[in-house]
Image 1 (cartoon, rainbow, N blue to C red):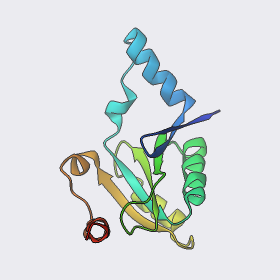
Image 2: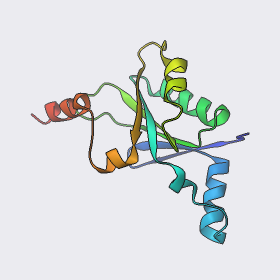
Image 3: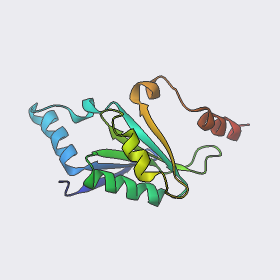
Length: 138
């Protein structure tokens, strides 16, 4: 059971991490024990909403009660975007349908399922997102 979530603001994001996740990471770094928990994360589930407080509630709910360890929400909107994004990190896409069912009726919520870190590194973004970014620079 998670007993605490740490929130850290840095570089335009609000990061959420369970205290257990950070403890595991620091034990790995300091003592070389266990595994690097960051290495187990391969991607994220993406949620979009105009109200970052709603996304924050989801991050807290999923980390405290549903087996997730870390997440982040953007502090500032880019381009013509009106929605903030919650990146809920996980080891695989096995929970995409569970999360879709859980949040499908939430007003104003857009859920984009899973995005791998590999796609992020390759610069693969949705057309909708790219259109909003480029329209603000015209």
